[in-house]
Length: 165
Image (tube, rainbow, N blue to C red; front, side):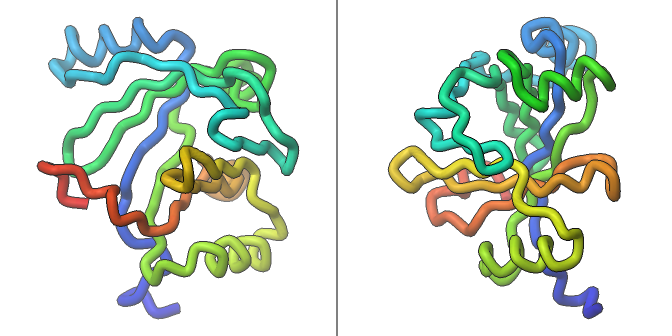
């Protein structure tokens, strides 16, 4: 392995599962002085083109809030409805869900295929929507690493002012 040329490049986001998003935001802001967080919003699987294990998810499935600091995003995720994220949080509690990387060479599909070859696992969750402005995949490496790896292809509109992605 050539560690000078990693397959994954920049960390873009850290995703944290939480039981109560409003309470978690309050703790971050009032106890730690970390904020401001975006207003929590519902995400709908049908509108975002979400599939879990290849099956369409046609309902509201999570509530999220983002913080853009430290050169990356922190995403709080409160699962709603019946879905694997909700099962996970009920069994394990709040905590790290995923780390979102960019693929160094931009070969998104090639990276997902390499994951399949090495782990024997298909993409756990895939989202393609918003008129092509969103495309992401989660690879379930919870047994191997303790969290999901989220990957996205490069997107020209992704760099927000003030963030060195």
